[in-house]
Amino acid sequence: MKSNKRLLGVAIISLILISCQSIKVVQIGQLNMISNRNIDHSQNYHLIQTYVGASNEERKKSRAETIQQAIDETVQNVQGGEYIMNARIYMVMVSSEHQYYSVEGDVWGIALESISNGFKAQDTVTWQISGNWYTGVIISLKDSKTCILKCIENGVIGELKYSELAKISGTIVGASFNGFKVDDNVTWKDKDTWYTGKIISLKDNKICIVKCDANGALGELKYGELAKIK
Image: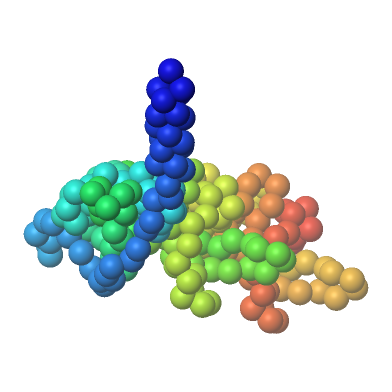
């Protein structure tokens, strides 16, 4: 009986050690572009999603037995995905007998949704971060809440919510608010100084975005603060 208990104890300890064994992830390659499919050069591909499969948790869950399978899994995780740019290839070592592969990168493809929340690819937009205004171009529509864009000032590519953006164009649905429209020349007073500028976007029914003639700065102003310059 004591022998059986001893064997059972050893078995339990062995199971605990195996379950606690950490999965090791090692990067084994890096490529500018990777795909298992032929690229159709007649198509207008867009960046759909950045850093797909980039978390360590995602890599550890991979059970792709070949690199080709890992590529397909990453691409197929993104609707409309066709190929991967800035790819990194990892080996996922679960044990000495079980090794798998994982691929991370930026997935490019054909965006299935051409317009979302009134925005579309190639729209020029503006947004505000920590009091500073930036301009950029929408590269692709990621989903119903977020798009991927490229900042004109620094060339950085990032994701922003549509609610954080305003178009710099006359394509806003509802061309006029409170008698003002895009491209109207306006004037306003700030601390006893008068400024002139041009409306570049109608943000909503209370606020528009104006570019100041004096310094080129972008800012939000209420329609009630403005007067048209004919």
